[in-house]
Length: 233
Ligand SMILES: [Zn+2]
Image 1 (tube, rainbow, N blue to C red):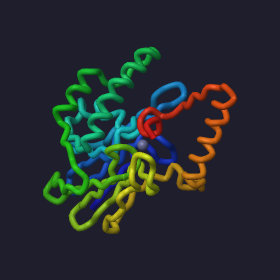
Image 2: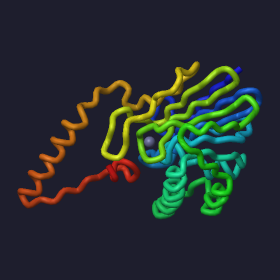
Image 3: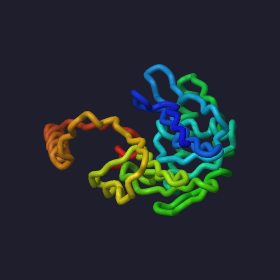
Image 4: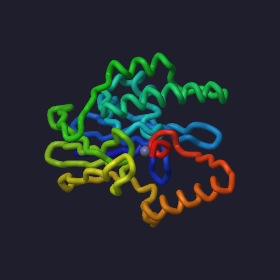
């Protein structure tokens, strides 16, 4: 039997974490934080020993609590090479910001260093066997550099966890690679699921026109944007 436990990111945005139990093996999909207005919020603790964690991408709402999880369970961490590079920067940065704001995170710089000994770099479409009846593959999610859709094979059943994904092509990425066999189970990102986004090209055109208008009138433009992904875009 497959058991799925949502540890966060259910009826909310942030602190993603999904524990998958199959034949006495526990695999965790993401383990992030929720950056609240006043304080950081964390996902629920897994109720079994996590031996494997697969990271969809390095945004803090998906990866922010992995150093804490690692010091507790010492799991093997599977992720793409770009996710590894970005995670290190973001974990250290979140420690720095917490210190500036007088907050304390539940992990230390040493815990971050410890995780690096347990990282397994995975390429897209590379089949990884993690237990006798459990394997997985990652597919490009088109969201940020290194982002991945996870397809877990659990015996004869399959489960897809999309993480954050984007189907449309953007300046930095092609759309998500969804050339994947239909799964038996699907955990799908749905933050914007009930909204109609205007066409990207139309928004870009309007944005450039507005920026040009301000510059022509002698103004300056400041663009607040999320640090990883949207700023580079
Ligand atoms: Zn994301």
